[in-house]
Image 1 (cartoon, rainbow, N blue to C red):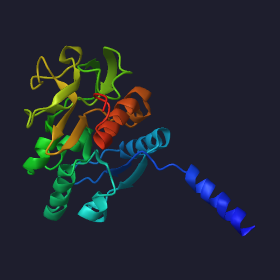
Image 2 (cartoon, helix red, strand yellow):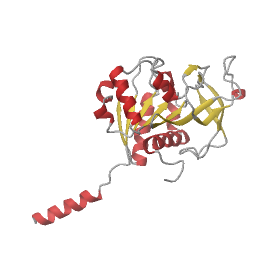
Image 3 (tube, rainbow, N blue to C red):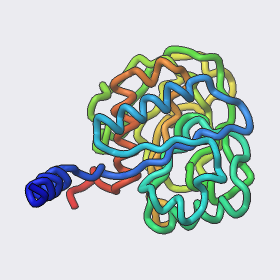
Image 4 (cartoon, rainbow, N blue to C red):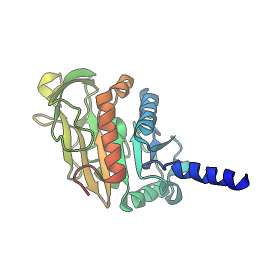
Length: 244
């Protein structure tokens, strides 16, 4: 009987599959606090269930920004972070983490974070400058070959807080842009090309950013969710652009 129970336990254990990868969701704010953060956390947790990856969420930098803790994750999502959120030791741990080949995902106000940390501003690619009122505009696809982009139409009617950005701090590849002729961008708009999402290989690792995600309801949009998962998947694995 004991042998039979052991055999059943071993068989059951062998049927349990490990998750594809582990993701840290970090949403600490030291500036503006978006009320869409809970919706964003819930959306990523649901994506984890749908796509079989583990999600750990915290706003406590002391808990996770060390070499030992960050090593547990293949990607870190800065979800609606703002202001100066890491101390010097935590910044060093995160830089080593990216250099080890891991991934970063920035969502919306992640570009309104750590302006005085040059390494981070280059990781993000463009930093936030300003935004007009929330409006509906036409979102355009710049690159459909990246993971998570296949569900967008060529032109999409989207309501968002359209961030305008400072000049690029590193060489990025663009995924989405917004047509400024379709909304009131104001005199300080970005002009003919106004980027919204991009990615890059950076300092040994990978970085993906999307400016979408201001409104809580956006996280219930299946097209946006798939876009967000594509960025998480690529940041965590490096897969999806070309067969490996």
